[in-house]
Image 1 (cartoon, rainbow, N blue to C red):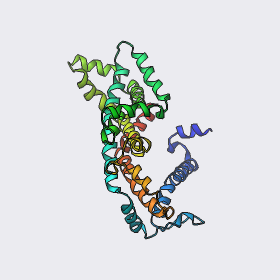
Image 2: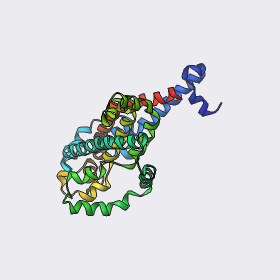
Image 3: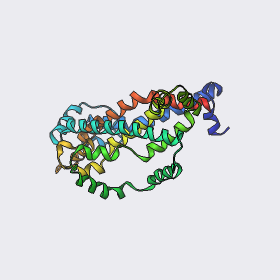
Image 4: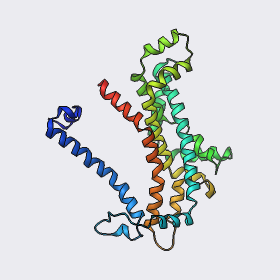
Length: 287
């Protein structure tokens, strides 16, 4: 029996040893996934020499608050954390809204040059981000948005991947018959979208939101280009400040800050994961 056939089966259909192997595989995979995060926390709770310990140190120390106090001395950590939270939330809400609207239009409406426009959107995915930095920077400079949150938010308010993702999901998840029934009942375009389509595509919207939030939160290059004032720094730029030291790298301090900066991502995932899992479960049932 191939691996693919095993994963297509339900756990109850695998027998005792099959179920044992299946859950053992999941446990090992979960431990491997969680270990880097745990080890980062362990290093953050010990002195800077813990990262070089052989074998790797696995016990939690008592230096976390001492290390984090040094973080606050070198960078305005909580200000940067708030900046990243604001920018990431604003961009994510915008991307989910506009990409869902665009994906819905491409999936369920007919209009001139529809296929050509969609191909153009897909083609932008192959263009490296770095090629767009210079023209985008010039536009931001012309608008006098350099060193402002607008330079981080506005260029990222919609993206090609989000449109493609939502279009593909809506094409199969939202029956055309439901939309036609809404039109017969006298519903307008936006009302049909909001009342009929959105409740069905919530899992895809949640997945897009999580992916986009993580992307914006982890972005280092573009904020480095457009931000000058340290009061506007995002969390990634604040973490970069911890590497500029004459006394050598203090990995305990760096890991304590990195661990804290990762927590919002875990919280966002836990808040929206049930919608993602619901979408995956729904797809499994349909298949």
